Every structure is written in structure tokens, then in C-alpha cells.
Image 1 (cartoon, rainbow, N blue to C red):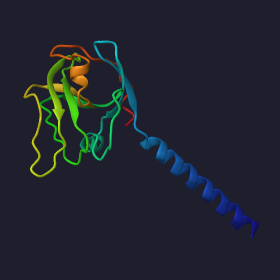
Image 2: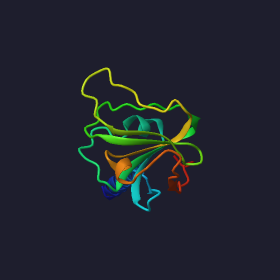
Image 3: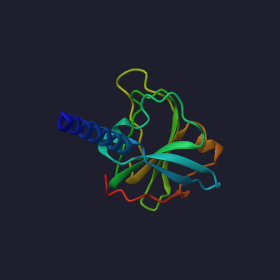
Length: 156
């Protein structure tokens, strides 16, 4: 009987640790993004196909100092839409040098299909989504450089 109880206790501990590890690995990773005017934005990283597909869907709000940074494996023409988004956003497409190549301001949520797509028609490596009005508030313009340091992304 005692052997069975110990086995059950070990099993419960192992399952609990596995559950905690799984939850920790699903926490969004963030990066500090520095805008040209010195403002700091904490941006969630969207690196995997799943993270990029989900983006900021279903969020009720986003604070002025928050955003999402989409990171692609290589430069390409990356279009975005606002399906299932509940908030308006500003979108900034950045090239490999982290310079703004295209800005979409005050992009509204998509209320019915088909949803319009937004994009620059130019190759970008990153897209930064911010609260609507941020581009205007921070006087962001084409060729401005956005600074951030990415963590090691090979582990995911």
C-alpha cells in the first residue's frame, strides 16, 4: 500500500511540474522597443506562425506603452488584417535595418467579411502594432529607426 501511495505522489508531482512548465512556456515573451522620440514600449513578440496569426485578436484594449512586434524569418511582403480585433491600431512595417518603410494609422477592427488587408508592398522583416494614434503622438515618419534588442529566438 505504501509503495502505491508513493508512486501516486510522485506521479502527481511530475504532472504538476509538467503543467507548470507548460504554462511558463506559453507566457508571452516581450521586448523593450525604443521609439525615435525616446518613448519606451513593451511589445509582446509574435515569432511563430501561431503567434503571428493570433496577434492582438480579442484584446479589449492596449495601453499607450504596449504593443506587439511581429518578427519574420526573412524579409517579405507581409500583409495584415484586423479579423477578430476589437481595437484600432497603428501598424509600422520595418526593414532589416529597423527603419519604418510603411505606416498604417488608426486601422479599425474588421466588422464583417471580407476583411481588408494592409501592407506596404515592400519587403519588411518586422511589423510593430501600437495603440491607434501612437504614430501621430510620437511623430513617427518613414525612415525613422525603431530600436530593440531581440532575445535568442532559436529556442522556440
